[in-house]
Image (cartoon, rainbow, N blue to C red; front, side):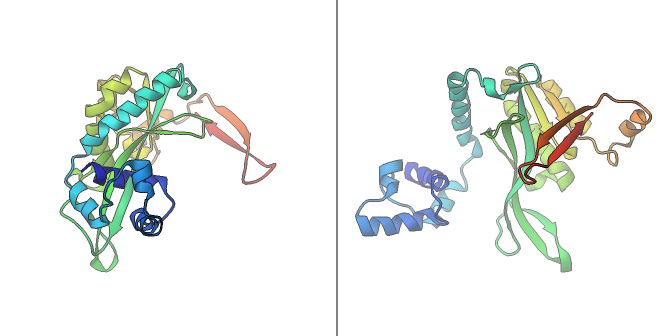
Length: 245
């Protein structure tokens, strides 16, 4: 299992589309592969063997690795000072993402949706939590939460996963001054309350179309506005202006 886990982990270090196939070629030509020298893998498992062995594993087995990495960064980066903002708080961006989608190959854990001509599309998705900071080109991935079919339609899946994530990790990050960022799908009272219940704060997008009552309250109100103009890399000397209320 150690070799299998390291083989899956090692994929992130190489540019080859199929890391293990590349390593087998290397081993055949030079007698020793990077699998052994870099990752301590004694026997290179097949792709199918990796999937069969790792698929049943609980994702919680990986959570300590994220926690250890985060704690190491806190010690070596001065309590993550470069990520501190808004009165020394930490910003954690929440966002759903898909990592598998196919119309033929699927498993019992796949979520489903209907496409044109009545075809069923199968996919896997997860909620990603990431430590971010304005003007900083590095991010720190935190523990993820898989979105499961029982979470319901798209409008509820990310919220359900976010609630489970907060139940497991929210209290820990609240002690560090966590502020959660998210798009309009997250700006619903149950999730906002879940964030507050763990001691955290939030900045969620509220679109007028999905929050008519808030829009009604704001009609005619002069809100304080902050404008920042920065050079646009894509446009050379041109500049762009961002406005926030």
